[in-house]
Image (cartoon, rainbow, N blue to C red; front, side, top):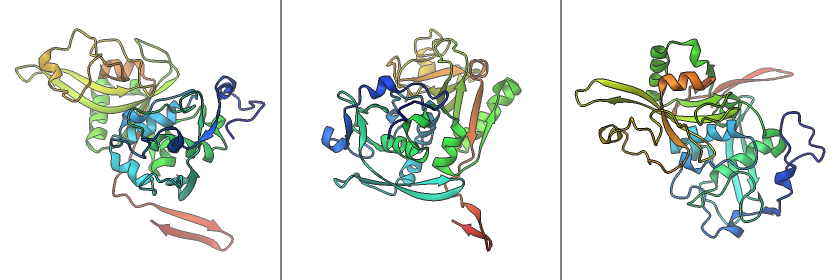
Length: 305
């Protein structure tokens, strides 16, 4: 089920407009002959938000996808086969659970109804979105939420939420650099729109990069952010069209696609501190072991995984 007919979830937003476009539930294999699980390889660019307000969840997936093996570890199904069965490992209240889905997705006219189709026909993110909806009853119930809850379900790792203004700019930069070097997972949320950044919206934080001049002196400290819409970007200094970029500075971020409107953008750490109300750090380690206690009438049993 996509939503309750009386749309009774307070604050979830009315899905009636999206539902009116629903043609049915179909396997991507029946709509897209090139459909695979990962396309050309797991990428944050596979996250293209559709007509439901689950930015908090899908921006978390995009941040996880900066290390593709973490997404691949989540999927116990290693190849998208004609049988249309997908199994994923997630964490429910701290306990690892294997959840099995069929591959049927809601389709509108020519496209998936929620997460949009990717250029390389990858569908891992669509299945992760469906799984998240299944865990939370239906698609309507995922129309609002917190990055920390989504990250805990997908990774089992703890998340801390930080207000950038609670730190000095120097300390904020140090914390973000430390998290980035340790390959922790970062996201951020903007509550009030500013300089092209959407208010009431969650973003992926993908990298931190210092920029130096020809003498080796620090020019600026930049944060790479991505809008899960896959378009609509920050428009201030150090954005794609900013005049502060020189050829020498651009050479220091060689993998950035300039002026393509793909949702990726740079901004100074000071602007990040001013515009984003909070950011999150998820302390994920690729070699972590999970321990938990399961209580029952006979006592508590400790399980180590």
